[in-house]
Image 1 (cartoon, one colour):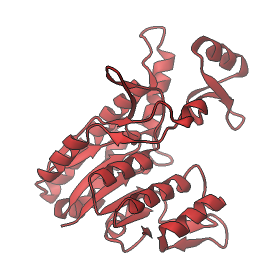
Image 2 (tube, one colour):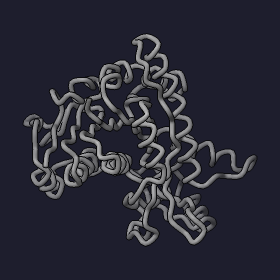
Image 3 (cartoon, rainbow, N blue to C red):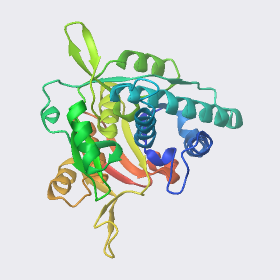
Image 4 (cartoon, rainbow, N blue to C red):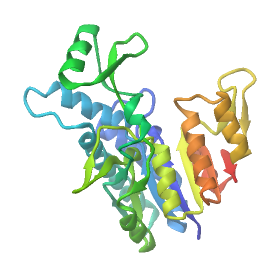
Length: 310
């Protein structure tokens, strides 16, 4: 029996052309678990997931209803998305269990991720979130709420928030205990709810943690053998989308880091996944694999995708 963390990308719940209804996301989650059912039944597995579209919708609802109900801070919206996605994944998994005869139960864990309050990212917010504003509206909310705003692709202005490095997972012992007791933990949604340590304990901060770095961290903490990122492409490519594109089947951590630093990999999509894979193997993990959700079993088994090794 092997131990593996499976990080589900956004396409596990929503794909291009899908609407964002509960039913649509449930259907995609059901399809995802069907492709992973044998691996889950035969190995120790931890599931993590993204939350981009879902927390974005929650922020929109938050903004447009703030004259009726008080707005919640970003970290609370992140926790809402963990609960929402957790319910979808748990219900879809139980439906697959009923068909496949898997005995293993799932457990959804609202997860907080510790970040350093002195992280330089807090001085340079970089992640756009929430609705678009025109120039006058952006100036108004920036003044009223102290937000940093930036124009995005000519569509309008959006709020920028920090993206600090994840340092620890507060629910690490609960996740470990559930895994060793034979459960399927579903955790670290969206990289985790960012919190900082204070004299009184911990408090949430408005930030966005990279989901793949959060997943890599918990895989390292749990000392799992394998870290798998399932996404919407079948591996890491050089010159992706160009006539001379070429998939990478195996690569060392050092070679992968050179690719990231050279700017060959897209900074907003594949580069963070590769860096998360590098972090995992350098911290003692056996191998990390990046591949297609549609070919989940072969990716997890190492027959397809891009394998990053020490």
